Length: 61
Image 1 (cartoon, rainbow, N blue to C red):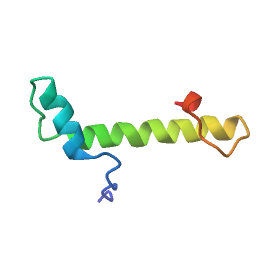
Image 2 (cartoon, rainbow, N blue to C red):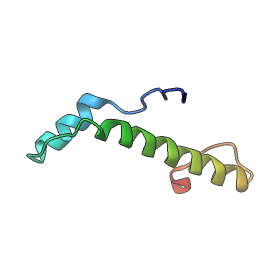
Image 3 (cartoon, rainbow, N blue to C red):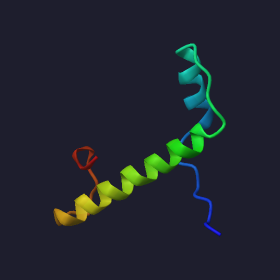
Image 4 (cartoon, rainbow, N blue to C red):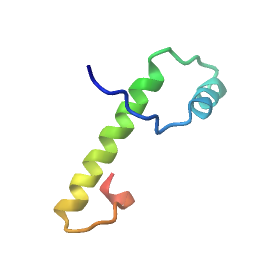
């Protein structure tokens, strides 16, 4: 069984942003968004290492 990842997003802020667009948040959105953030950060870290740096920068996203 896969270990559940710690949330990197603030659910209430995400929901408020979407509500501000006069839309609703589905029950699975937050999990999918969290997975996408993990994926983006993993790719950024890989790019950083490939460029022989130890600091992840905005350009790595």
